[in-house]
Length: 91
Image (cartoon, rainbow, N blue to C red; front, side):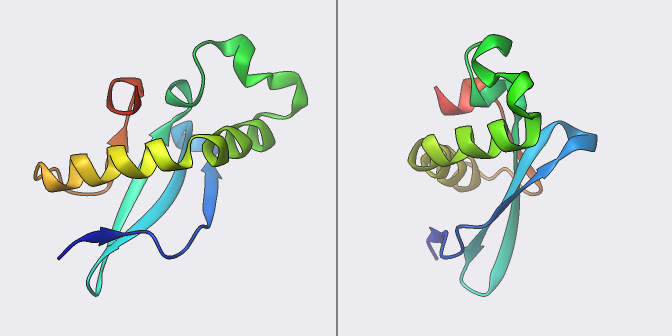
């Protein structure tokens, strides 16, 4: 089966300093995390003064296609969930 992302929802996980999202391989749900550091080149780009959660979710939305591509690549390489994507995976 192919990994798909039919549900565009994502959530901020402050405890893990990451954004969570879900993909599906057929009927199987696959959990993903994207580290905050992967959402911006520097802390300045994340603009914490704007509210970390809002800024991270906005950055996720901007990078969504790259994040989905990285998630598909990580999943097809046999990594199993929850899969954590880093800057190295996305760039």
